[in-house]
Amino acid sequence: MPLAAYLTLAALVFAIGLFGVLTRRNAVGILLGIELMLNAVNINLVAFARFRADLAGLVFTLFTISITVAEVAVGLAIVIVLFRVRRTVEADHLDLLRG
Amino acid sequence: MTLQTVAFAAVAVVLLAASLGVVLTPNLFHAVLYLAAALVATGIVFLLLDAPFLFGVQLLLYAGGVVTIVVFAIMLTERLVGQSIRQTSRYLINGALLSAAVFVGVMGFVVQMPVGGPRPSWPGELTALLGRALVGPFVMPFELLAVLLVIALLGALYLARSDT
Image (tube, rainbow over all chains, first blue to last red; front, side):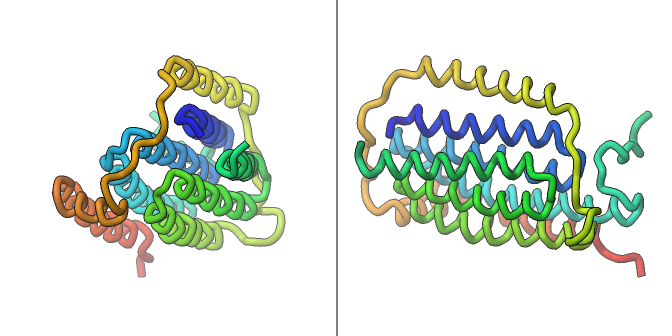
């Protein structure tokens, strides 16, 4: 398969993830959309690394996977705290910082 | 059609269907299960790109770790059964338009790309090369990553602790 096929697939998954981030009301649902977008970027990194025979893309993918796991852990901890304080994880109701 | 083309098409269909399931299904728990399917499909894309080590990392960290954490978060914030887990979406038209615009913008760059030749081969065993790169030229970000993981662990514990 040519490189463009992998890039197209990644762009499609990225657009679907962006759609989820924009339309979900639940904070956990928004995090799931962010996961999809990061995943699409990983496909791009690995595809470029493979077709250019450059190890940097694979190392970057390892780093983004690890950082994503840390991000999800912290993000869900924040969601749990929000739920404890406000009894909701609907993003529309979380406007404590609105001026 | 070669075997690799067939495999790529099958994985792409599964990945796109699972991704649509993640963003469209009203049941949040089902969305997490679709996410697990999408993550495994992505791992198989890595396999098609000759990166079996990344396939393993993807399964262990993403499909194993992230999905487990998200399921725990759902259990702590909503009941797993019943109506409370149902969620609605808003701004469907606007979201679809903006996502389509981003996709078209990215594809504008992809179609301009020169058609590459065949895949160059790696100079040696890929996993061994990756290991040497991690402790060679990339050792500083690698160590910083360890610090980041400790900070994230402490931060998550601090945020989610109970007050008692």
